Length: 591
Image (cartoon, one colour):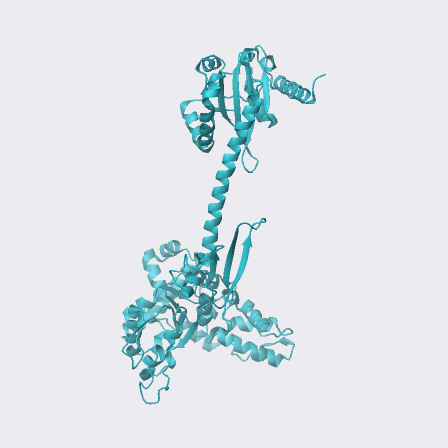
């Protein structure tokens, strides 16, 4: 009585013969002997170069045995194409008569029942011996094949050992299976190496861009990796040194399930005594303009370039400045804001750069650390930079160029490592033309320039107003439709600062009910009658007309600069220059 294994084998062969009959193949027909062209072979070899690299190594170790056994060892791709062959020359010549060679396809629907085609179809190791082959021309063969799978289970191809039937070897199927397993193991190891490399690169990228200071420690407590935020604290030469437990770092241990391999991660989660600063999530709004500015500011935060924030008073320049700092690699370091317009001209150096004790009459006995030194390793925000005197600008320029400060009354300079963010409501290019602002300082500050839109230029005023009401914790206050319309009509000369103030008072006056127009202490800017007509008839200046034309063209083309320039009949570069010159931002209307 045949064994279970033999019965299963017979069933596999019988099932294959049935498929061949369904394909319309006849056993006495000539075998399909069409070979691929040289170009086709070259393309398939290129697609399978990883398989070929490994199988050539495996077959190379077995080549002597293969030849002594008068066999041929073949690698076949998932479509049934023979792409690599080594073995006994005499058998190879005989096999070539039935196209058992590189460039031939041995899929079941072309060559009938054969070990290669059946292994591909059934995805199982199989031996086809002598007259088990469907085509009579192949009865002289005995072949054993085993499928090869990728680490993810995808069929990649087949390993095959073939010989004349009189050279039948009972171990040929085991040999094919072992070779296929060896190939799969090599692929798995290579894939693991790639995965390990990618994981390391991902880890290093994440560490580098994480604003929290992060360290990786080996089992000897030595630092093997550190991101930029950590290196600023522990020193740039810290890699390889023993971690001595710096204050503020918490250590988490990571190990495998055998606890034979482990690492430690040191994280400085927070800095004690630092008040919460704004983040980009605090910047509300759905207007395309504000979204665009947020995206630009976030990209700028990941660099150390200076940032210049422009825009009218009340548009949120400090909100942006703090958000850039909190998203940067310096987020765990100080953020020092300086109102440049509030510093008396004769105190600029002492305020910004500090002073030694006894430097001048009335000075602190212990001396004083200036704003720049206080911001060391962090960010200094120079607000209202356009209001600085020329004398103060010269002192500031020197510091930005040399990255050193000299406290008043001291002969010794100190190096500083800071990120500069400056802001102003003034048009600095006009200030330069008028001789009130230094051009060289402007270009030092203008690393990345971001112009914030005024509130009247935004399309999300109502949405922003609702957000502000919610943030002030007025749960029952809501805007009536008439109040919303009034908000949309108002010119908002004070921008978001004015809107915020108006809403606070309106919520108070509404006493928990709906906010009505009379609760909003703002003027209705929509005029009517003779005065409005007179205003409409006023002749705009040439500059105003140019700005209006540019805005209308940009609005009509959805801010496509090329199309807008074509409408205006000017060059794209000229249009871009004028947008910068006039501080034109993305508008949703041509007003």
